[in-house]
Image (tube, rainbow, N blue to C red; front, side):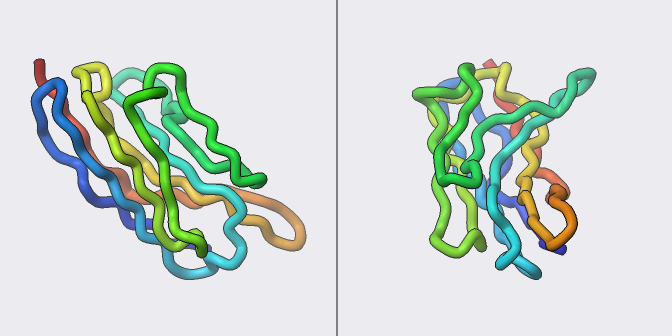
Length: 119
């Protein structure tokens, strides 16, 4: 399993920035993709941005041009630079690691970090 710890959330005004960090430990050698998801009250968890297994970046349309995803070379750290935040970005942000084993693949999740944006 992979343990994930998010940090960097907080309360900001619209237009401000935050940088989320995700630190991975455990079986990171089995990780083949990582990303950030978010969930706001009453809504399903949705993809924010991810590195897929081919190293390509996929991002939600709503964050393109504002959010930037980056990572280190070993899948041990994942970052999300969020600029020009808007109230609709308010959510709990979760780090996700996709793990490949001999028989299956699965997702490990962090506990989440709250982002609150006021207008």
